Length: 213
Ligand SMILES: Cc1cc2nc3c(=O)[nH]c(=O)nc-3n(C[C@H](O)[C@H](O)[C@H](O)COP(=O)(O)O)c2cc1C
Image (cartoon, rainbow, N blue to C red; front, top):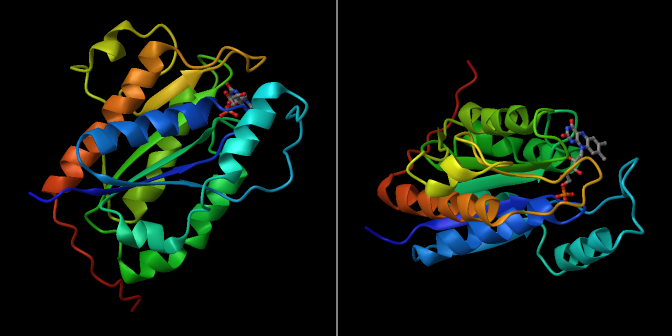
């Protein structure tokens, strides 16, 4: 069994989704995987995001040190993990734009049989956290991938009082976005990254082109 290649692709404004990405990447690396931690495009700040906050400035500075995700990162990877802040129960626009950008991979069937997982951060506990995780998994299924969540054998999934779910890792950051990630939330993200690495190392991708007629 050879070591897996795992791409973690993240969007974040105040850093809580970024903290999950770093925990997931560390979890995958802990299983011996090669890991690429990538960000999506850094555009104009969205409406209603406070760019003066320390957490925004710190997250932005960290994201600027990371390479932007590219189509070849997904070709390279055996396991792909997408994360973004919750936006109206959906992923963010920059992550969605990246998913549109990699559409040629669908035609090639390049991701068929690879492993996918999701993470998010939401302000509220019951305002789209799990919906966003589920929504983020859907494009993986469209690409013919195998989706993974978090099993309840991960002890922190049973103990968490905020984020994290069988559908993926998560932070509930509070409606003012200040709460940050708990130890349980980070542990769930680490476990998810590790699981993606372990499963991806056992699965043989089966790329096959899509014939449209
Ligand atoms: C435009 C916009 C839409 C949002 N939509 C939701 C939402 O539907 N549900 C929710 O709980 N939080 C929502 N939030 C709050 C963010 O999801 C929350 O601040 C998140 O934890 C930020 O993650 P980050 O620290 O990685 O930037 C929204 C924030 C913005 C700016």
